[in-house]
Image (cartoon, rainbow, N blue to C red; front, top):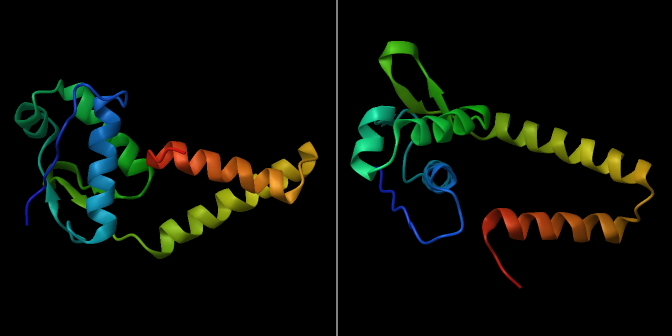
Length: 126
C-alpha cells in the first residue's frame, strides 16, 4: 500500500485541493488504513513537483477535517475516522438546517442548495 497522488496541472482545481481530496478519498475508502504514515510535507512536495507550502496547506486542511493527525516529530498519520467525522457532519447539517430555516427557505430549496454544493465539492457536473 502506497500513497498515490496525481496532480493535473490543467485542472481548474488548485493543486493543494487535489492533494487534499486524493488523500481524503484514499483514507476514507481504506486504501490508506488508519495509522498509515504519510510522507513529510517536504518529501511529498518534492515527489509531486509542488511547493512545500502547497502540501502543507493540504495537510492543514486534512488535519482540520480529522482525516490525518500530526504527532509532532513522529510524523503525520491517517486518523481514525468514523464517529468523529459523523458527529462533525451531523453538527454541520444541524447548523445548516437552522440557518436556512431562519432565512425562510423551504425544505426543497434547502435540499437543492445542498445538492448543488455537494456536486461542486465532489466535482460532479450536471
